[in-house]
Length: 257
Image 1 (tube, rainbow, N blue to C red):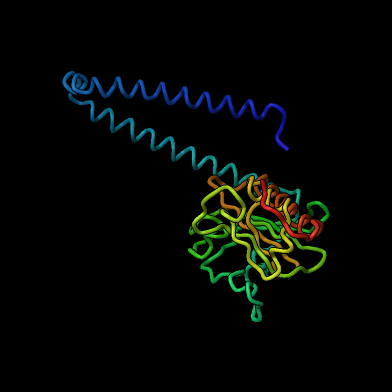
Image 2 (cartoon, rainbow, N blue to C red):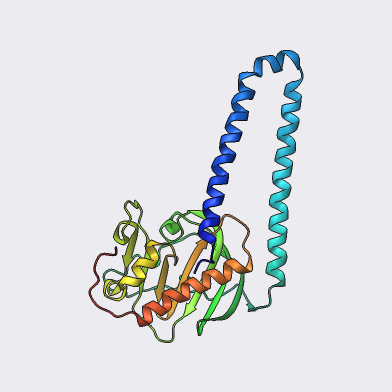
């Protein structure tokens, strides 16, 4: 649940961002209109421009390095969960030799998936393994939204096995409803994925996922270095999926509103 005041804070950031863009646009317009005069009066201005670009690039590179180093320190110092090996076995390495119709695409042939770190813990009474990983495979686009990337993963062990199923991204997503944005895989999935689970996918509360036997897993891409909070968040959101799969009534579902 969002913290109190977060809605107004988000609105304030939007307003501040728009105001900043207006100020920057005005400054750039003024500079552009006076370029000729600047070049005539300052023949070596290109050296100053080049120096400014070099300094900006160096600052950006240093900031990226500092963020990555800080994230790595947080990861190495994290003791809330128990660190485990990265060798697995991992559920996405499984094969389904005798799949029922509708289960064929549950585990796509994928390229390298590298687990960089892994921990085990408990979320909502369910055992989880989670950590950092990177991947490179066009077949993972419908699971991650990106062919090449890095982020975090989570695996939740269910107390009992369920039929293989998945909710993945639709290749050409258009529209706001569940069936427009996601693909349901698995012969028995349509009867087991209820209304609430569909809604939390639409609003982005939970990631796309795959379930094989009693192991539920998801990959979550990140645009920043992974930190413990990202790993915990992915595990928590996937645990919500597990709870809904285990408890939500199996009945005909209407179209989400």
